[in-house]
Image (cartoon, rainbow, N blue to C red):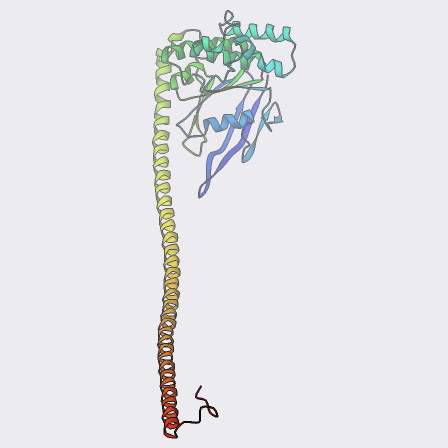
Length: 363
């Protein structure tokens, strides 16, 4: 039987302004046939832990060993069932169950036989030819479980598979899962927020702390092998439920305080960012204002120069007009002088008694 060994596993996420530690060092060992359920407040790292085991997310430190082999990525030795069924709507129910087998190269007869076996195991043997949309939500989730089982994985990883179902369907499927596990004895890691679901199904319940997630407490309920659904009302079941609830309440309050602190940090960071942006905008506007002032100064100097040139142009124009008037006056005086000379010559001519016109014509 497979053994899952998680050693000092940590996961850090890069976030704005630094690093967020999602998982503190986590140590967990699961033997073959164990049904381990992880409980914890929202954001405590349950799904992060499952994603590391599935190979979807590399750890920041530590290691995960499956049968002594390090987990480096996704593989057929681990089957995953998500919160949503993730079925292919264009495939029949049987083809959805056989999808992994098809991808691994199994022949048609093998695919159909194993798919029908797993559909019978989850109580859907009459629905192999149906379309996915013809099934209820609970039936679709059972198809997802059958698909995971069809690949015969060494370990099943179940991430809150019943979270979206109504309470009655959820309780019925819990009994179905228990029956399937009792028949197959697959190794299972189950993520949930339900204390009752955890105690009803698990051979071991691990309670995780608020972020950074670590294993705070472990419980070994004795109800997993029971076929009686009435165990949920037994005194031991109620006692363990109350004890786990107390632990989870403490962690939930811590998680709320952490979330409030993170929210406050975000508000403060946003305020500083807004102030920085405002200062940048102010400095930019100051530079723009200075540039505009320089442009206005240049424009004023250009205007002064133009006005000076304009005034000089008017002065020059007036001087030209004065000169033109002087020239016109001088020309008039010259003309008057010529007329006077002509008159004087005529008078002189007449005074001399004529006879000059042949020798000195007056033309």
